[in-house]
Image (cartoon, rainbow, N blue to C red; front, top):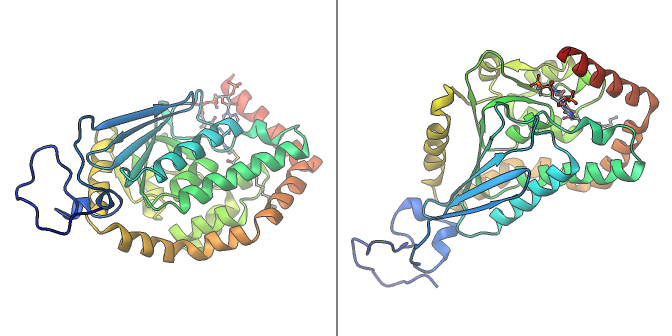
Length: 303
Ligand SMILES: CCCCCCCC/C=C\C/C=C/C(=O)SCCNC(=O)CCNC(=O)[C@H](O)C(C)(C)COP(=O)(O)OP(=O)(O)OC[C@H]1O[C@@H](n2cnc3c(N)ncnc32)[C@H](O)[C@@H]1OP(=O)(O)O
């Protein structure tokens, strides 16, 4: 339990002293003083690398699934497991999400998971997409997306689900919910997450046209909060996290929950219906044809 008696000041080196400074408020503060022999914990699978700095309480998650960090069922499963581990780790208060793949943050949902598969597979895949969003949008950690590459559709959803978005300034990078360009529709909870970030009018136009916004434009419409040169990205993300962690966790978490609750509750209340809608929609011949044409277009672009 936390000591209620005054403790020596300054604290002995290597001792994490609860309530000694605002930086230690929150999850870490609930633990007794501990010695800190190792300050870094790492875990990894073949899609994602996570490094937790236990002295600051900040984890960095790197997507490393070549060629484009597409969100396959395997990727989503590993992502959810990693999120759960961090959420349950009282030493972790914040998460920075970034990519280890040059030029791409994430290419969005893996189109091959939505093409030519069984209805059972579509249902399982969609449940995993929902689960990822529920965990990230509903996370009690401070979450920052350090977007170091293009981020269409599901990739954009990941960024939107964080508390803050910093994108690398590069005229080649784009971000947005471009589902309409694929002949599909952004589900209501993608749309709600987008509206909560950029407002109704901007979201309506962007969604109907399936726009992928260049970085400067994304900044102008509030889709990203800051734009920085590549070499400043990690430093900026760390500074933003420090600013957010300077507040007591319970106040920040309750505020976050208040702001996001309606959208999360709406999805939870309609989760099964949403899966059925997805399966019905994606199984249509016309939609399968659109996806097939889109994949063809991607391949042609290369040659
Ligand atoms: C009535 C209402 C009912 C509601 C129903 C709701 C339905 C909603 C359904 C789904 C929502 C969908 C969300 C999504 O996220 S869909 C995915 C959208 N993503 C994209 O449009 C991105 C497409 N990719 C690109 O634009 C580019 O690949 C790039 C910019 C990401 C990278 O470009 P580049 O570096 O030039 O690489 P390549 O284009 O050459 O790609 C390499 C390799 O990877 C393949 N690939 C790319 N993206 C994907 C992907 N998302 N899924 C699967 N595969 C992908 C690409 O085809 C290349 O493959 P290769 O030729 O075999 O090498």
